[in-house]
Amino acid sequence: MKKLIALLLVLSCVLGLSACKKDNQTKRETISDSAVATFEYNEDNGYKLITSEIDSLDTFDGLMLKQAEVDFTGDWVYRIIFNPQKYSKNTEEVVILFGEECVSINGVTYIADDNVLYSDILSWAEAKYKFFDYDLITD
Image (cartoon, helix red, strand yellow):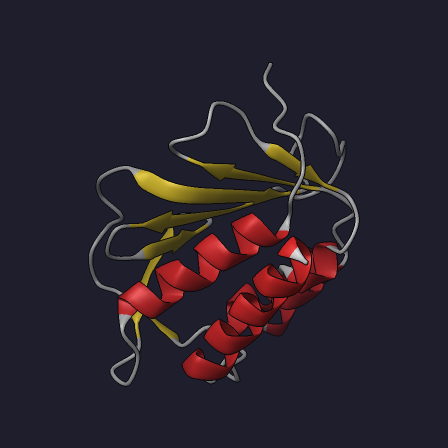
């Protein structure tokens, strides 16, 4: 029941955001090819190791984002690392940081598109994090 509620929340966020924009085919392919990802929330002590249903995360590049002229500042709220070096050798690591006001994808900062509230994007990340009801790993 908990997963069903989380899935419905994710679906409503995705529909609300009208996630239909594909910025970079190479980025999407790199993420879709990932076999492992780590997902962190800054208030938890540890990370979730995602090895199944990882393709539900690759839709983040469909969020309505536009490149910003400013650097990512402040702390991240959610962090997703695709192909983390600890688990995936000889692959390109892709780091996505969801901050309070913007997103960083491998060091490039993005803000919400003009027709989207950034709080909806942060809600999307929160729903995805909750969707993965995994135990936290602490190193």
